[in-house]
Image: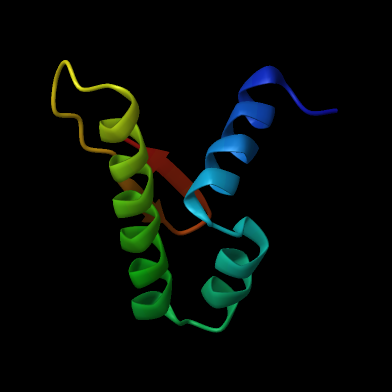
Length: 73
């Protein structure tokens, strides 16, 4: 059963164009560079969308991949 946090993360990944399954496959294939490129692109996409919606302050979103964990700042 997914938690609210899980569902929210899925929505964020959808906006970012980030596929968690693909990231997991790349981890298994030891394709760290490709994983980082995808995470950086997703960070830029979400940052752009947030800035479009909220103009009161400049926010920057960053996806940080650490093995099987994904942190979002």
